[in-house]
Image (cartoon, rainbow, N blue to C red; front, side, top):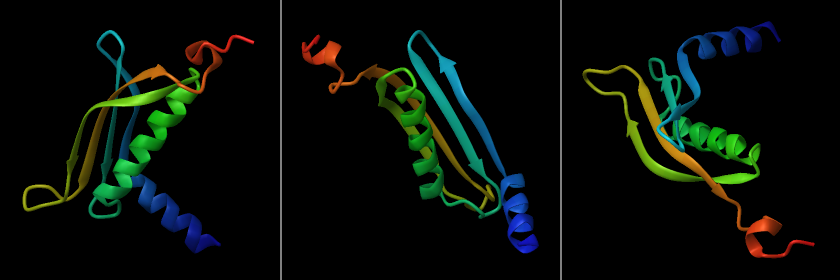
Length: 102
């Protein structure tokens, strides 16, 4: 159990996370960075989209991706990065959108 806790602490210490940042009039930005190969670009992309989904769901909406940048570790960088710009739009399943105002 101690090994699991130690590994989780090490992994979380090697990543940075911006949270949801308002950008522009109706847009939002999420920035994720995984340190030194501990988080792949795919892992960061999935995490950013999950966070956008959860954020918009809290507003009873769904996310619409405006732009996305994903960087793999390379010669000049030791870590993966993900930048997701999105906005929250009306959920088509919502009664107010579908016209069903029962």
